[in-house]
Image: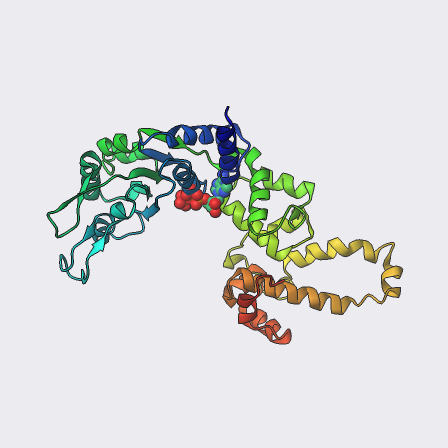
Length: 361
Ligand SMILES: Nc1ncnc2c1ncn2[C@@H]1O[C@H](COP(=O)(O)OP(=O)(O)OP(=O)(O)O)[C@@H](O)[C@H]1O
């Protein structure tokens, strides 16, 4: 392999992290497809990295200097999707107060990423197929045809075979879009990727492996978990770990506090409502109350003061994680909203403090 090929491989592995055979295969499919203009369809469950793959494909293709334009076909109402994709002329429909170029034109010479393609309404699928075949579009309300040169990358978490059988997705469009398919397995089928992804997400939140430090038993628990939300869920957990346990050794019991609990499981009285992370913290300090207790006391250790400081830190971290939404922050540390507010007052914490400071802890 030449030097350029080697550098490309390293860059790609830095962008699309994973040591599993499945991820190596995905990277090799990207390298192959990047050298061509053929349409690529990326499939896999939600949060598994489809958009990262699409961006990597664009980045390593000859189109990388042009735009990568993403459209979520499932998030745009049917009536607006056509205009979003193809643009419109002023006055072509009620509300078209100005001319607008569509995403196909925006992605001219670049790549157009049609995310959640399985959600595209059936009649829009016909229009899309025609555009792909003719390589031309017309803005709504215009008869002028515009040539388009755009690489189409699509993605879906749906099983399109079923959608085709149920006549929700056109078979001809499917074959047109998935000339080169790339399938990303769920994270639970490539557990070797969990550790490198943790290191990658840690770096992304500005911490190295020392900053977010999972104890061996905690790491085993993370590698054992099924990750229904895939890499996105793992990323959220790493972000919470950075906020709640910066610089600490995170034990397997503390991990449970990183997973968001539902409101219905919130404890009903405050005594039970101590955040599990507090319990974990006590266990971290436990040696101080055993053999070394007298040393701690003679060192002037002030337990009350220590716990107050810890409490303040957790309140701020939770508030930061919840982006200043008090109810959400309270939920994160298993406190009632009213209790959380009282504690905020006691610690003189204002919502904006969590929003202003990068490191709330
Ligand atoms: N292999 C990977 N390497 C680096 N980051 C990854 C990888 N896989 C996923 N991620 C990260 O995980 C998160 C979710 O990934 P992404 O948005 O690409 O998933 P998706 O499959 O497109 O999800 P959805 O189906 O919900 O749109 C993103 O923050 C992304 O950067």
